[in-house]
Length: 302
View 1 (spheres, one colour):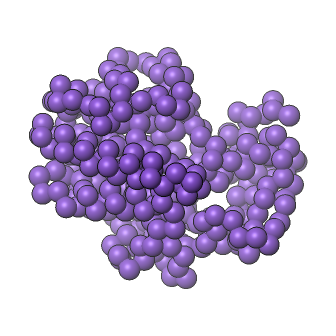
View 2 (cartoon, rainbow, N blue to C red):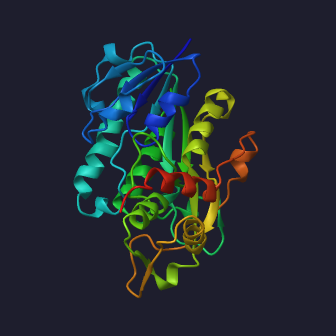
């Protein structure tokens, strides 16, 4: 049985992943529970070892015998990262570097790191993951993602996999609402107007459904020959207007507040996922279906 350790296993992605991994994997979850997502541990359908620790507090005994690490633990709020840059760097880079060292010390062979397409800056051309010239992170959060990617690429005795995820949408027991699509669904459910920069309304950004994110991880767990590479993983590149139209099809409470002031991360780029598709992975999540499901969860909010 393959032993998998998932850091940040109670978060948005992690809480879904630990419920979807096949039974052939023996799961250890590490989470410091600072976000109070205890509900992520409710009603699990099999035995899972849980370690309530920060990653820099892990010992050799905690990780010895693990075959694969899936490193989700991080401060993930790009907008908030401007206000606490030092903390983000400490949690996301310094602690991760120490954790990688521990993994190497006990002989862990495979390390999966879900990075982010936010490492790219604005581009008029389609963005490819093997073109370093298009890497231009626009927030301290995105800078830490590149920092960890570089740490992993410089390791000679561990097999890494870097998955640059689009902005996550979709529901899980540990879901968060500060990312674009989920946030819009939440605000509409409360009857709040959606604040949108006018010039951004037709700009394109990469998004990734939660189910596709988890499916991509499972795909590579079954195909270790594709490690030591970086892949863009997205469900699609959508205009903000596409997102709004998807919400309008389900809700009659959509009100737009169009503003002239530029908002954070309001730039356009179109990401290619040709490389990951060549490994046999095909995205399946549909924007409109996910929006409908998320709004249904929030249906009784006023």
